[in-house]
Image (cartoon, rainbow, N blue to C red; front, side, top):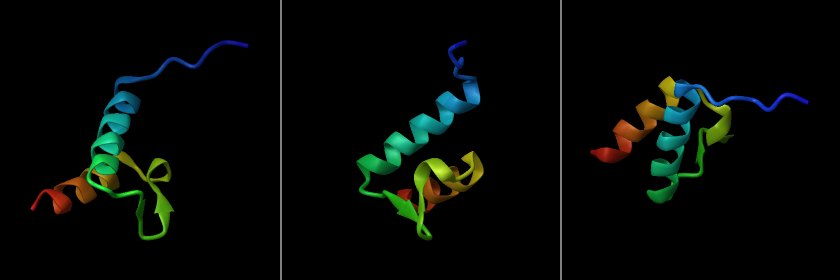
Length: 50
């Protein structure tokens, strides 16, 4: 089986997820963080940064 190579977008998404978890955010509107798009994750991150 060929291992999946992580893209730059995947890496950025994981960084945002890690930052949200550090802030105590584990779900957004009932969805797990990994289920959200990068846009939704960044939006949530910006709202929590206020």
